[in-house]
Length: 116
Length: 117
Image 1: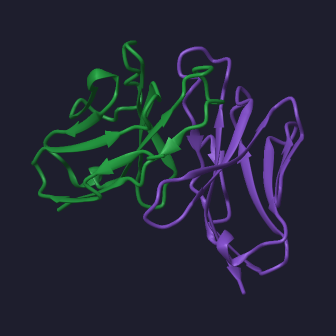
Image 2 (image 1 turned 30 degrees about the vertical axis):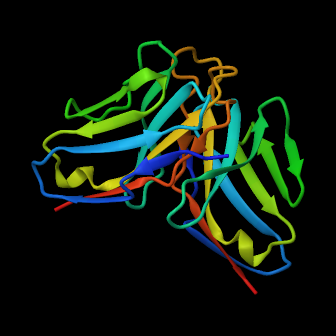
């Protein structure tokens, strides 16, 4: 049973336009969400996070939106740059689940290609 | 400063052989995690070490998998009698255990790609 779902395996966007990556989750205990970015042959690197007490968090060109009622979050990148081309993973944790609250549950990832 | 390092970067082994994968966390990080990513899948949690506490082994898929962390630093993940379904990228991460929860940013190594023939 996949608790974090990224239904789009890939996305292509023109340079300068907005990239929107989507993520859905099923576990209502999740209350902290993260996006990681991964280049080939490298480990994932932390990009941005959001707590369930917020509905938006912004960091430069990257904004994460959280819709708790829909159990949906999205990552917006604007403007998109060729260097943003990578696999993006959505992850979630349940901070107050006691043991295991440090565990991150990851989606399968979305491969973003930004076309120059 | 140095990030998380893992060795080897690639490992090809025959079914039934044992393998050891190594992780050097960021200096000063007391928390260490192992994940694996099978083809087309997300990262799957395997095991968690925090300081001198007993590790959380709840993610290990079978008793063929074990891990240890010596001196609170370097960790070794051992897979005995490897099977073809063990083929995956094995990723190690470390973090400062500020909260001991998912809010502690995890820094990942480049991974070890294991191929079992």
